[in-house]
Image 1 (cartoon, rainbow, N blue to C red):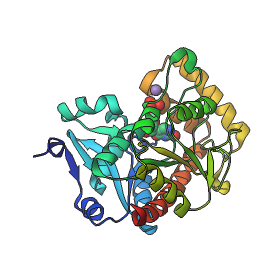
Image 2 (cartoon, protein in one colour):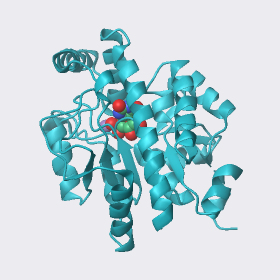
Image 3 (cartoon, rainbow, N blue to C red):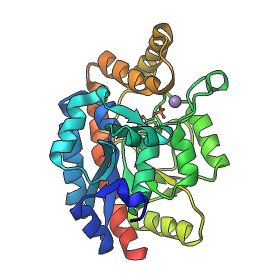
Image 4 (cartoon, helix red, strand yellow):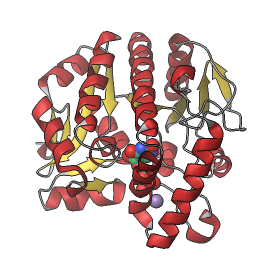
Length: 308
Ligand code: PSU
Ligand code: MN
């Protein structure tokens, strides 16, 4: 047996779709266990899967369950991850072997979801936001492992840009250094998750799923390994007030410093603070932008399946 097959479990629906060259979209599980409260996290995760189906692709939600790398969770497994919440270990690249060896459950981040997607042969992944270079990274050195994964792993990540809990400018510089292209879907502006613009630009504006799929196919056919960020702005009707979100983020960053939170706990802490201060408004925006990204991800996967 191939050594990897000992650990990797792909659902029948997903493995059949992949074998037949049909479109599949990967989905992460940290957003379920650590990114949103129960039961909204579970409802959202199930709705996201439906959005992907409605747009012609097969969803593959990814996590580690009892040490198995599972690609294509069923509804009970999603419910389990959502209910357990932060009891499930947030699992990025460095954590994977330990969760596997100890046969534990792990909620996969963007980085580890990309890794598992690549193992399974999935090229497109939709989520809310990616990790990045944190504000004040020049002293904390807090830079998400998501960025190194984008540098090395050939999976396209559809997201609503980078939250301004991060330093968006430094994140874009980092991506440039590692050769990760940032595509704006129907925009030349880098979106900032809750809002449609950040003051920074994307590298390339592409206006439809077919053009995006063509550029992904070109990159990988040329042997240029690594990921691509597809930045899809939150729909205008769901976007938040820029001043409100900026003030909220600044106060959440102060709270984080006061509480002495750092490392892998930073992102979940900030997300929960922001949701609390905005009385759930940010959570609602977050949910809507994930649906929007799921739809685009599925449409890109449909086009890419014709090319690769
Ligand atoms: N950004 C969000 N929601 C999230 C995350 C980021 O808006 O749920 C999660 C993703 O799983 C991402 C991870 O990969 O946080 C990044 O964490 P860190 O900064 O510790 O690498
Ligand atoms: Mn970090």
